[in-house]
Structure formats: structure tokens, C-alpha cells
Image (cartoon, rainbow, N blue to C red):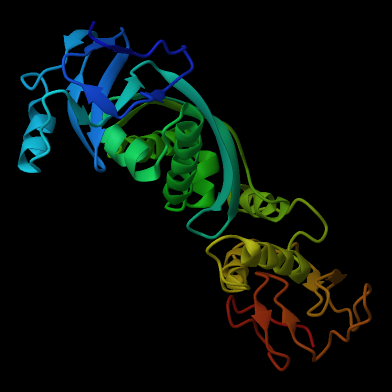
Length: 315
């Protein structure tokens, strides 16, 4: 009696490998609805079978038979190959991670995605074979890592302000990029939804400044905040330590300092215009350099006027 080869897989299973790689000629291959069977050998996928009952002969295994014949391994009773059963149903997954925007702002995100196998032959070669992901758990782990890697890469092309003020448009662009990446490994990204997006408190503050031109706290524009943000950036993947130092001050300078306020050059505390010493740390203000009370730009210790906006500096 011919051997029957079939996969009685569950609804949550994506892939299953037949336990025996010695396949007898004349065996009956049964492929159920929402399944395909791919014959795999020496790291390459060959013949693919859709739903139905298939009697295995050299006639319906032309690709694999051709290889076996070229290798002079054709046997009348059996041949060597792996049979990978793949589900074509839709599956759901979760993603979450941390990356950074093009302006080096830390970005945390999480959400849900839905996918299915679109090209079983490509999927078996690129995912199952190349990564040795022969079980559903292994495939799920690979897909989660794959979408996270591409998500970080996609978000790195946007500015922080774009992400938060144009989230729908950003999500669509990210979805398109990830769908293209999925297609290269035989998967179809059915849908993707962000369920959470956040950055650090310092960058939330900065985003507020860019939107409103106003500060949200007494010391929101201090050097201490800049240094903390830069230190956070230095610890993030892909950013050198201190990378934020060169980027943050010019952005902060675009905001307005409240009138009649001078920033201490040492601790960043706000002082009344004309103060000779900082009320917070005692730093000498007169002649010691500082920040322009009008635009917030750094000014040299001997400057009489702000080099950025021309405001007269009190000595």
C-alpha cells in the first residue's frame, strides 16, 4: 500500500516538516485547504503542490527529478528530499522596540501586524531553509525580529516632528517599506497598526517647543536638560556618545527666552536680567559669558551685543 504523507496541522501552525527525508516513489501526498507542500533539497526549494491528493511520480516532480538525474542519484524506489508543509492562512503578530529618528531622537513603539505566506517557494528558501526555522515557533521568532529590524530602519528616515504630527502618513509610509521587505522573503504584510509611540521626556519637551514656541517648565531650556538628552542619545543604538550635543543647542536656540531673563552659563537656571550672580549656584554672571536674553544664543564674555540677533547684552 502506498505511503500517505500529510500534515494534520492546527490553525496556529505556520510550517511543519515531514519527519522522513526518504520519500518513496508512488507515495500519496495529501495537501489540505490553506496548505501547500514544498519539496526542499540541498538548501533549495523545488516542486510545490497545492491542495489535493497527489501521487508522487517523476512526472509531477519535474524540477526535483531533473536535479536527481543530473546527480545520477535516481532510484526506482525512493529519493531524498525534505517536504515542508506551509500554511497560507493569515496570522497575527506583535511588535515592539526602540529606535531613533533621523534627528537622533529616541523613539519607543509597539503595535500589531497581520501577515500570510504569499510565495511558499521563496518563503521556504529564504526563511525556513536559510535560517533553519523548521518549526512554527522558530518562524514566529524570525518574523518578529525581521519586522523589528525593518521598523527601526524605516523610522530612522523620519524626523521626530513628522512622526508625532503626521502619524497616519508616517504609518502608511512605514507599512509600504515593510511590505516590500516582507515580499522579498515570500510574505504578504496584510496590515500593520501602531498602538503606542513615545520618546523621552526631554524630546517631548522639545517637540512642544517646536509646535508652540513656548516652554513648559521653569528650567526646560537649561543646559542640564540638553546634556541629559545627549547622554540618552549616546546610549542608543547607532549614536556616538555626545552626538546630540551638536544638534540640540541650535534647535533650542530657535525658541524664545522669556523677556528680562538671563540663563546662568554654569547651571542653566533663569535669573533676572542684570543679576551679577546666579541665584541658584552663585556663578558670577557679569563678564562671565552667558546667553542672550532675547534669543537664547550663547554670547562671549566680552560681548556687548548678541552675535545672533543683535540684542544689547547687560554687563
